[in-house]
Length: 281
Length: 281
Image (cartoon, rainbow over the protein chains, first blue to last red):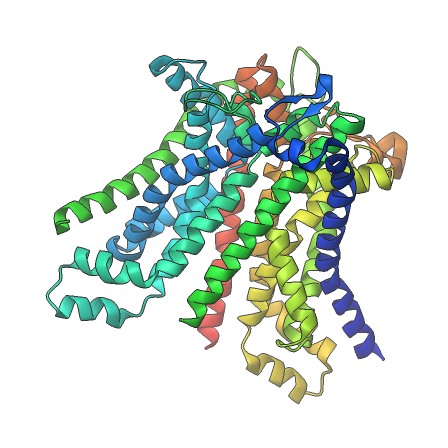
């Protein structure tokens, strides 16, 4: 009797996370899709004007903005993160490695407002000095996000590199390759699916980041023509206007969330596909 | 590429990561520590003295409530997945997929969901309760995953020992398995606490930003329906208003210190888990 009850209770608890995902989907779609229908799906997705005061809701600039900012973060974060992962996995000695590893853990724990504030106070003024514009820009957002994705990329890529069998590396050495060549020509290619997974996770983190981006990106709802211009992401669009939006405007913001959610689900699916392929090979 | 160039690149990458970390922490500390004055910790928030004390207390309340909801649920789910269900069952696969999805959802989506569900549909308004429930859903997958890992690390012989002594499954789980998994579970809870402390996007529209501690003394339980702001939200508001930049720096210092303490705690807990299981083997 007691055993059966416990089983049911534990099972019910396990169901809660599934229920949460179902509820999140239900509420986002139920509130977002009617707004999309009212605006018209093509006008909503591909309209380049976002002007709530005139009831014009085109989120194309925000979709492009999210993609730009994420791409910038990947361009900045991936090389640095990957090289750091290779360093931690194959170059560093015990002490330095553990010191840097705790540093990376700390980076992962720092709240996004602190990153955003750091960007606002240091990166933005620097860009303002050195380049045209106000400093609040695509570049600033890309730099801050590039830093923020570092811990994700370093941790996942390092695990992938650590999992490469020792024999691969030793085989390369035995063929006369130097340590560096063995690592870059044999170990890194062997870990490629894990490294890809790290990058995809980084993309997921970057596209969903909100507060840090809002603080440094300038947030103009226009497609930027240079990296020194302001940009507004989908996440920023929601957080900036949700506080006072009503009726169709509110619906359009929730619909922006739906589009973001679909992006995240696609990234999730891509991650799983890469992971499964890696496990099979 | 020659080995020397490759080696140089790896060292450069690691150095950049280290410099970013040191630079960020040093920048915040140097700018913020001078503003850590006693008046910043005054009990009352006023527009002249933007004390962070109410936000600090609200953060504690909010995080405690969120963990109170998420930790038991997460532990029970993990117990079901590890100790009860068979790995191949449909239900387990469903729970795993949805938990992974939940983990990838950006916090702004949680914020939207919380606004639509807890704040609006359930009529809780912008309140401590809405915020805590939203955070609880957000950290649930973190707790599930870390608890699962901790349970899986407990040697089989512990369970067999429990059964051999005539204990049922429930008793075995609570008396033999959970105690030895406790450090890992604690580590997970601390990780979740860190996310609660740093969160803004999920709270802006669910908890609101009122700079007062919910008044439990005069309202009793109904204070749960009061709006309040956490430390991270407080910092975001200060930074975006731009009137109290020094105080924003000081708040960043407090947030950094909290995150560092949580990191140390997590490592100590997980280290103890690893040491213990190694010692037993």
